[in-house]
Structures are given as structure tokens and as C-alpha cells.
Image (cartoon, rainbow, N blue to C red; front, side, top):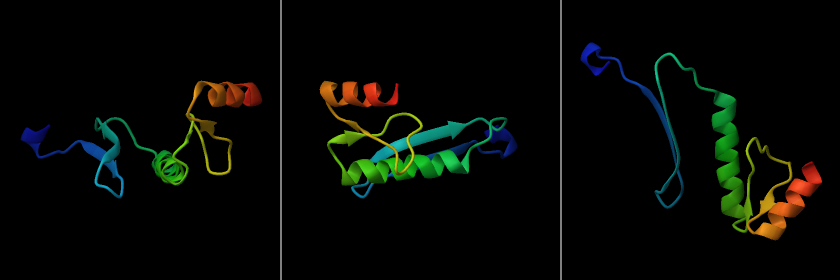
Length: 81
């Protein structure tokens, strides 16, 4: 692809300390979702503000997050099951 002057598409989300927290590289034939990028960025911002919590897959602002321990995870999965 680079021989043809075509670049693959990539996304890197870098935190305030300059650490890559998320990266995605897509083949040309695979589209990207602006909504998923926004959700991922919001999840990163949330966990930076709430360091004892994690955002489960598909998490959106205002939804329940999980505590970063087995008990908290169990409580989360019990609540959403």
C-alpha cells in the first residue's frame, strides 16, 4: 500500500503524561466509528478522574462503572445481569 502512496488509518489516544492509552490501526477496507472514538476518550477521562474504577466494554458516560477489585467487579456484574 505504501508503494501506491496510500496510508493505513490509525488512531492514538495519548494521556496528559504522554502515554499511549489506546491505539487502533485500520485496513483501508475497514471503517472507523467516530462514536466509538468519542466513547473511548470519555472512558479514559473518566478513569483518570476515578482511578479506583474501570469502564467495562461499551461503557458510556452516566453508566455504572466497576471498582478495580474482585468484590467491585462482582457487584457490578450482579447489578447488570
